[in-house]
Image (cartoon, rainbow, N blue to C red):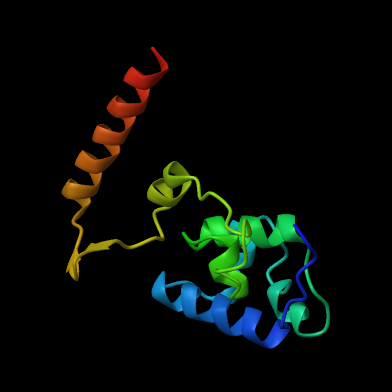
Length: 121
């Protein structure tokens, strides 16, 4: 894949948008991604590594491509670990505009767990 020049302004706007959607501050996103609380704010002046952005994308329940605003650039999309997203208690979920209750989320976790345990057998 060719090097993609990132627009830091668009990157920060997208991170803020996904953080707000997940009810998180930028400091919380950074901490959950294993960064210092102020790391994301420093990206106004320098671009983080793709690995760092992948970690932030996973915390936010999105892909690298969506996070950097390059969704339609070939193979730029990175898989998001669904288990990490579902297990992150700070994430809130909806389905077709309806909130997913804690009980429904528990059922979803159990279905996924059972489905993938059977697949490994």
